[in-house]
Length: 233
Image 1 (cartoon, rainbow, N blue to C red):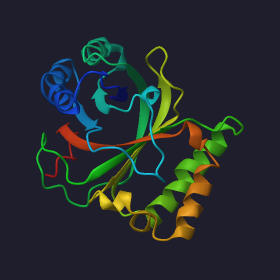
Image 2: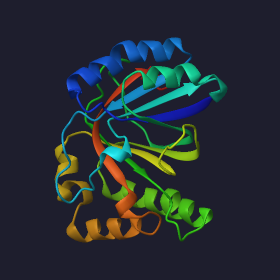
Image 3: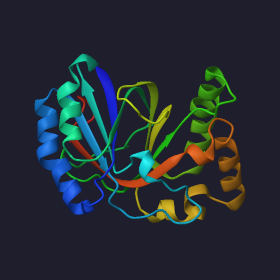
């Protein structure tokens, strides 16, 4: 199987409640009928990020993040037609997934909102470093730092193998950092532990990406169909 992630913008005139309802209802049903073996939808329905946490912009397409597994990406046409019918823009990526930290215990069913909040981040490789440096700094060094500092209940890394849709932003990483409570993200001392550690983390991020090109959004997670072994059973 192959994992695909689609970033979706919310149409300008649509309220977030209607966008979420359509995504989780008829759109999700169509995606599953169209061949998705597993499906998770993150919806940016929590509000704006405060000062001090990098904000997103409309070009980042972070109205929602739709992650799904297909037997083959060759069969993705129905998936993209379904997502395009939402009325916004989409950007699709073939990714490789790593889960450095998963839920210690999952006791909620598929389809229910997952407890907590997800910070979804999308960012490119810094233009002046090579591939090996990017992955070493991001996946090896920064993952250890993040897990040591942040109160994460789940940490999921998607390394972009290639874009699948025309005009997709040149992101190389799509990351989901999940915490148990919104204040764990909004309070820098709860998220970083100290001012010094916040400065250390921000400095390290800049070793592998440009902060001006990093976009983030606060999202609610809905695991609509789990991969085998991830349903809490």
